Image (cartoon, rainbow, N blue to C red; front, top):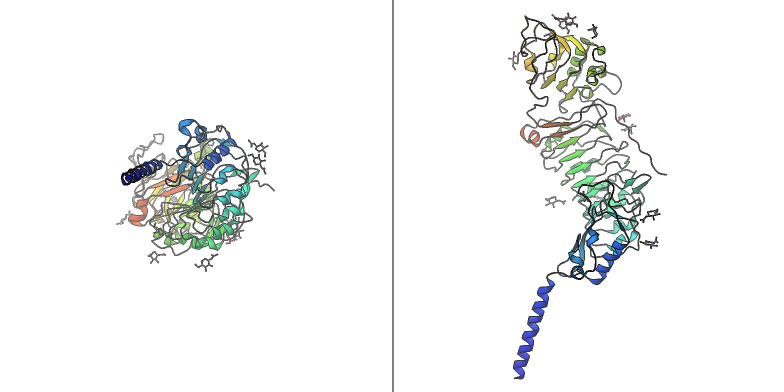
Length: 501
Ligand SMILES: *[C@@H]1O[C@H](CO)[C@@H](O)[C@H](O)[C@H]1NC(C)=O
Ligand SMILES: *[C@@H]1O[C@H](CO)[C@@H](O)[C@H](O)[C@H]1NC(C)=O
Ligand SMILES: *[C@@H]1O[C@H](CO)[C@@H](O)[C@H](O)[C@H]1NC(C)=O
Ligand SMILES: *[C@@H]1O[C@H](CO)[C@@H](O)[C@H](O)[C@H]1NC(C)=O
Ligand SMILES: *[C@@H]1O[C@H](CO)[C@@H](O)[C@H](O)[C@H]1NC(C)=O
Ligand SMILES: *[C@@H]1O[C@H](CO)[C@@H](O)[C@H](O)[C@H]1NC(C)=O
Ligand SMILES: *[C@@H]1O[C@H](CO)[C@@H](O)[C@H](O)[C@H]1NC(C)=O
Ligand SMILES: *[C@@H]1O[C@H](CO)[C@@H](O)[C@H](O)[C@H]1NC(C)=O
Ligand SMILES: *[C@@H]1O[C@H](CO)[C@@H](O)[C@H](O)[C@H]1NC(C)=O
Ligand SMILES: *[C@@H]1O[C@H](CO)[C@@H](O)[C@H](O)[C@H]1NC(C)=O
Ligand SMILES: *[C@@H]1O[C@H](CO)[C@@H](O)[C@H](O)[C@H]1NC(C)=O
Ligand SMILES: *[C@@H]1O[C@H](CO)[C@@H](O)[C@H](O)[C@H]1NC(C)=O
């Protein structure tokens, strides 16, 4: 009887423990962490920003409360717990309409089991990043992008040695700005050695880039845009094996060069170094970067790449032209592109001339666009235009070119000649016969797209002063290893912004 009782007791016990443990699979939130979350919520105001973000803002904390069915904070919007311990390990409060100041006493920093924290796209009212962030020592991902933090980044943040991803971008709200000066970028790089993703866009750094950055061998994403960097950028960073995204644009005082040896195993897919002060040449080893799909190098100080023969051919062709701007003075497209072609200081690189595009590897002109409504001249076989034997695309459209017969050599220049809109041109490849000259009649429209390359190239903008980019299609790189970069003929853009004292 006693034995039987013990048996039943232990059976009951087993059943209860089993039942209890199966209940625990749905983690329940810890009291102290629930309280910390609620107090954090109460320390802030929910207010919809006047402008809408992408993704649209949504006040996740609004649903956090202690109503009966809702007291398990692990099920709250944006909160995720460890399934076994019930500790809050992930908090995503991005785009949550949070507004208000935050300081070291914030109960957010009691959530010491957090591994993933995003407060991006909120408004912390120019708060400093509180030093108590160091309590979140398990953090792997920290995202404070566009959340209106300001002033010096605390050294305690650099104690978060488990960080794999750090995004502090876009905390630039003049006159306050997030700064990484003391400690600076060097300390960050030497302490956060596990980083794979580092985005410091618009953080005020204003120092040189430490060589130790090239020691972050796991780095896949690096953005240091608009950080007022100085000195020479360590070229070895281009060679980091897993680096895929590299953006350094708008650091006008940052010098550097692209290393001449780049291996085919290199992971770079996106490189944007425009508006810096890089010099040297664009090395042919760029052709080794089979994964590269975006390369953007305008407004640097790269040395001349123009081939001498092509430069003199262009200049001689220019001499044979008459520029007559009075024709369409009101039309902005009537700008005579050839006017900028000269050998003045810093301008001898014909690849940077208006209307000219080169293959950067060879320096040969491959595209010439002189559509402009203001050029007068004769097209015939003596023309040095036909010395540009590498030309793949030519437009002389909407000018006043004449000829008794378009030289057949023009068909050797390019498969996509655009000659329409020149009343004085006749003969093949135009449909107009030469005998019956009718100057007023418009030529047949050339239906070919101006960008009918075999390769896929997209120009994002096309005027001096505009930001101009180019996407080099993947096929371009893998299929024929043909490639080029266009360096537009504008002077380097000077962009300085006001700084607080
Ligand atoms: C925002 O910061 C200002 C200046 O520090 C302060 O006066 C104001 O109370 C703060 N607003 C909130 C909601 O914390
Ligand atoms: C920190 O913020 C709380 C409100 O969130 C405020 O009561 C407290 O005075 C602040 N502490 C300091 C040192 O500013
Ligand atoms: C940080 O959060 C923003 C907004 O959700 C997002 O766009 C961005 O990609 C995040 N950064 C990282 C490094 O994940
Ligand atoms: C970077 O790595 C090299 C060798 O891999 C080492 O000699 C150097 O001390 C490292 N630099 C820093 C700052 O850690
Ligand atoms: C680079 O990426 C590969 C594949 O994702 C990975 O196996 C390797 O460990 C990474 N290298 C470093 C140094 O992180
Ligand atoms: C660019 O770098 C060169 C040195 O390579 C320097 O002489 C020049 O002043 C720099 N230009 C700017 C705008 O910083
Ligand atoms: C291109 O890559 C190959 C193999 O990785 C290498 O042998 C060659 O030197 C590289 N070329 C350049 C110009 O770096
Ligand atoms: C380009 O670099 C040369 C020296 O490398 C320098 O003298 C010159 O000032 C630089 N030009 C610009 C516009 O920075
Ligand atoms: C320039 O254009 C004006 C007005 O269209 C015309 O009268 C003049 O003859 C042109 N000059 C030349 C050199 O073609
Ligand atoms: C051929 O073109 C040149 C320069 O464009 C011009 O000087 C010459 O008169 C033209 N010859 C004929 C026969 O039109
Ligand atoms: C072509 O135009 C030029 C200048 O406008 C003129 O001198 C020349 O006689 C013209 N030639 C022909 C063949 O019409
Ligand atoms: C065009 O090029 C072909 C070979 O590429 C050559 O045989 C032909 O003579 C050229 N035609 C002219 C008009 O130059």
